[in-house]
Image (cartoon, rainbow over all chains, first blue to last red):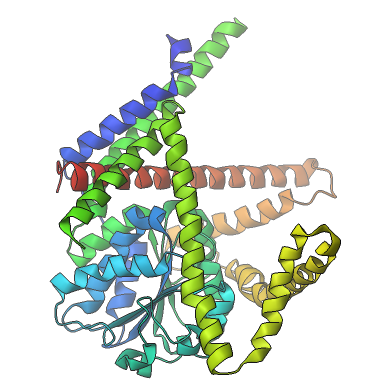
Length: 277
Length: 210
């Protein structure tokens, strides 16, 4: 029996994982989501920004980061656009799908905040090639660096927001959504560290261990950790979404992985003892 | 976007999701087709985006309209990299590589040193007692001891025995705990990725969940 446990065909594990996740999504039990200190910090930073502040949103992710980062991004938009906050957002990125991700994120505005206007309350500059050189140039002139056009090909100089926000240095806060490189390190060295602008980040779970030294050093002011951080942020913003819906499934899938790890290790230990004896 | 286009898009998404996941059960031709489609699509999208959003604008705005002909110098240096395909003049590509290496090194020296070395070292200067919260004091001790011991582990010029050996061992275990945490986070990230796809399949495609 222990030998079988130590050598379970991985396809059974995958099939069981798919079954558990599907079941948890179809029939969730509603496990409690308690916002962590890190998530609360991000919420408080956004909440304490002066009314009408301009936030630079770095869309440093592609379609693979949507499950973990899009809920956090949309929650930040909801918090920023709510009555009495009226934050303004300028979105750009060094990743190719930056413009598409911003477009998808702000698709909620039409229904939830119909009074908000593109060009006045938010602008989507999209992707421009150049990597971290781009961040340096955005500090000189955003319109010139973006070649005068936004993601949709419209003239940037016509927008009231871009007439006021001419340089990245003017941002009150930099909020980035990252799945890898280029990412937070480029923003820290070119933008936030030299100009003393606070930086908050929503990162995928795999990047969290890498980000923690930066959080500990104060270079990242607040961190939303993966889908869990996004779910906690949705709870704080009081608008549950896909991250909250996925938490039960994530908890059960992790429990399944832990059970298999324990069984596998037990199988290994007992078969090893058997061979030695 | 029309209803039909959305429906076709949803079905295509579902097809490619299922086909790509099928690889964990058995490698099959449909998986290879999906994989190649994804790679080709991503590469093509990148090229098209860069051309229309940047290269064409550079030529029409900077060069043709504003007369900034100096921009042609870095363009030519960049294009020299393609001489690698012509054996007789492939040596010209070395100029492009030299520029990239020089700029890259200069950037790293100028920009990376303070935030990723000086500031990180400064972050280890922590209050080890008297902060008012015993857990903060304990955490700070763990942080400082873990950092120092991990650094000692990488002193390869001294033999790992005696006191240095014990300190290195503590550093090694500290790193193992960190790698375990990193592995746990990686598992969580991959599960989240798959969760997103399952939410799409069960929600947007099959309408079994809201």
